[in-house]
Length: 130
Image (cartoon, rainbow, N blue to C red; front, side, top):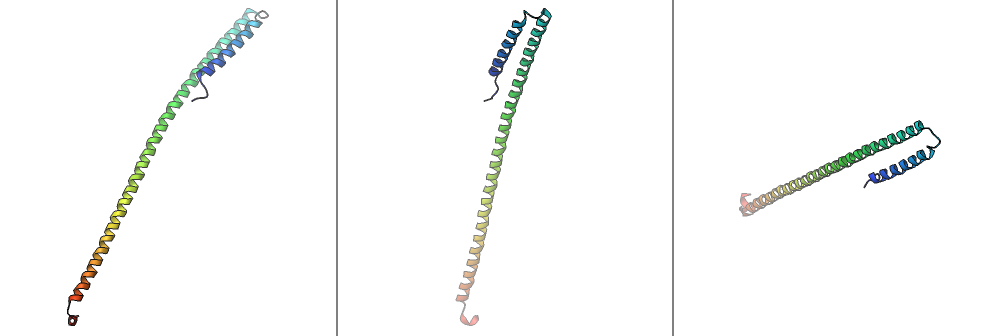
């Protein structure tokens, strides 16, 4: 939602132009035709300038809204990509920890088996051969 809309601007412009035309019409009895023409021309050019400003403001507002929407989409896409990358990193970290734990467990089991095997072979040997 925007604070500035065409309806507001056209309403204010209409009120300003009506006020100016009433002001010009009210003074026409005192002034010459040349002054009256000059005032009406100024009023016309003021209205044209306001209309051009309105079109310009609306164009910039639409461009701003479009670029804001595009930027928002890009930021969302980047955020989603970062979340995916972090999730993948965490998954790889967990897999690495699991593999490292398995390797350490295998080493410990191998050590235990080796120790148990050595102990059992010593127990089976005759006492004089030691």
